[in-house]
Amino acid sequence: MSFIEVDSICKKYKVSKRKSGIPGMVANLFVPKYEDKEAVKDISFTIEQGEMVGFVGPNGAGKSTTIKMLSGILYPDTGSIHVDGMIPYKQRKQYVGRIGVVFGQKSQLQWDLPVIDSFELLKAIYSIPSDIYKKNLDRYTEMLDMDRFINQPVRQLSLGQRMRADIAAALLHSPKIVFFDEPTIGVDVVGKDKIRSFIRELNAEDQVTMLFTTHDMQDIEKTCNRLIIINQGSILYDGALDGIRQLHGSARQLDVFFVNDTSVAAIPDVEIIEADKRHSQLLFDGTKVPINDLMSRLLSTYNIKDINIAEPDIDSIIRKIYSREKVAC
Amino acid sequence: MLKYLAYAKKAFLGRSAYRFDHLMGILSTCLQFFIFYEIYRALYGSGDSVDGITMSMVTTNFVLSLGLGAMFSPDDYYLPRRIWDGSISTELLRPISFPGRMIAENVGASCFNLIFKFVPVLLIAIFTTGMEKPAGAVSMILFIVSALLGYGVLWTISFLVQMTSFWLINIWSLITIKDVLVNVCSGKMIPLWFMPVWMTGILRFTPFEAIYFTPVQIYLGQLTMPEMLTKCAVQIVWIVILYLIGSILWKQGQKKLIVQGG
Image 1 (cartoon, each protein chain N blue to C red):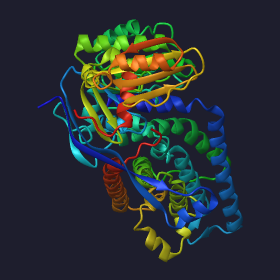
Image 2: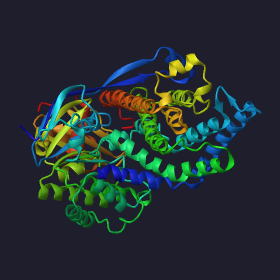
Image 3: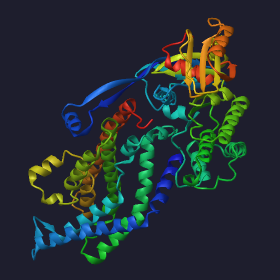
Image 4: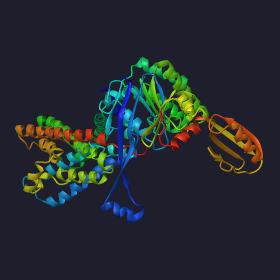
């Protein structure tokens, strides 16, 4: 049995459908209309202990709902979840003592109190032994560079500082599993780097199992080795990060810069991803369209200043996957 | 247990942060009391007693039920607020019982109110009006016990109402109806002695008279020993029934839970 086992879970929401304005309101008052929205449909996956998994998908894909079910807050409508031999939503009280959750958009700290006071309250709630509390606190303070703001009230922290404090708060009780829901949202480049290296170090040293949702593919590239892509409530891809590149192994990305404002005419089997005034980005499959032909065609037709060929970056691969229905896994 | 104590302490300390609000709380309780007091004084006129109920008994009823009401005020919006703004999700991540935490925080706040609201109101009332003394030492002790049980009934009614917010999200109207029922049917506004017989007959089967009226009757020594013990037992039964229904709703509600706002 795997450490985390998710077996075909579904979750539906009732969404109130109401026309705008006063007529809509009156109509809704007498005949309320609801629509079922399937936030998660039939998702299954397993995660082993110590794995670090990236969980990506566009907004509204069902990532947060899945994380909330995994952390015992929401009940799945159908299907089951087992984590470390426990059923999160049924044994919530026991279970949440062993996990840590970071919601990038919702702080779990006490707004009016200094950071350290929030930590003290958590120490009491989780019954953390004093020696472990002290050890963790010292370690995280150093790793996340919290010295300067640990005695300030949370409401006076910058977003990056608050996020680091939130991450430390979620880890004070040495959880075996940590769920990160967009931990780098709104954080600057330096802050992101700090958070990423902290997460990497924790996974490497303590064998903490991690599931990580984000919109920043850099986060995934720098921390995770496995990737799950989800859209409209279903899994599109589940596998190694390198695997997704290999899926598109023969794909090439061609950036063309023109001397004058130019727009490229359609070329068979070549996708035009971006078209600015003096720059176009083309994507093509190297086995179908010989580079030689394409280049000579471009050079003979247009007045070109510079050309750049590369493997497509992870962002554009993901973009392609989002817009498509399902990838063979 | 220590965890819950930490929450009770937090609530106790949190109360002291808003001094103006707390002073106004004392003032509004006293104001309510004096309005009722003056109305009944005018009604009594020069008469000594109505149906065997003296003015000083009525005064005692108001001092005690308004005083206890100011001290035990369950936060009716504790759960609804958290469901409405979605912060229920982070609260559920704590390894403690949520109802347990609701009680702990309310007990912390009530302890604060005991010292800084109930006692001042009681002192003001004692020095300005003719309030009865407790009927005896036994009555006094049983009064304290049944006042605490009355708080239990009041809290479990609030608990039950709050649980409906899983389904209804906004339950302001329900809470208002509950408040009216509690205020009228518990004797906090009209002493239950003056209610028509058919009404008290109905009220006997509701939890409302167990909130303030039972402790008041015990305090005044209106009940015999077996009656007092029976009434306290009835209070316990109400607490158990209301809490059980509330817990079932809590279990079911978690399955229905919607986390608003992402």
